[in-house]
Length: 97
Image 1 (tube, helix red, strand yellow):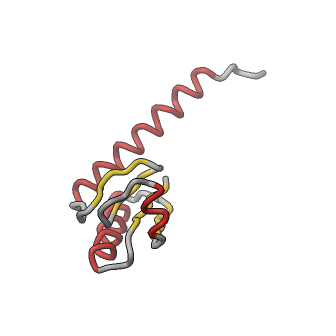
Image 2 (cartoon, one colour; image 1 turned 135 degrees about the vertical axis):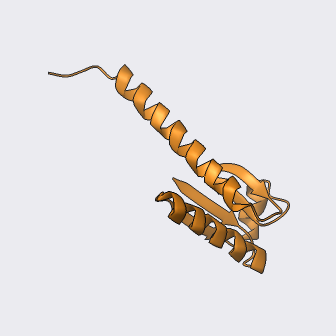
């Protein structure tokens, strides 16, 4: 799982990062968390307001600090989606002797 926070490094960005770290810790989830400071990257991704949060390449929030429970929900949904994909993949794979 990859979480990216796009923003200039302002207090709101740091609060967003702290919220994400806390959610990860409380759920016991491991993820790569990256803070992207480059305004060109903001433009490339269509970010108009910072901080913006991307989870596995999908924008989850922009222009606000997400609430802890909201971040936890994103993380749990992402894990469920990954589990379902993994289960489907193993069902579709032929068994080898």
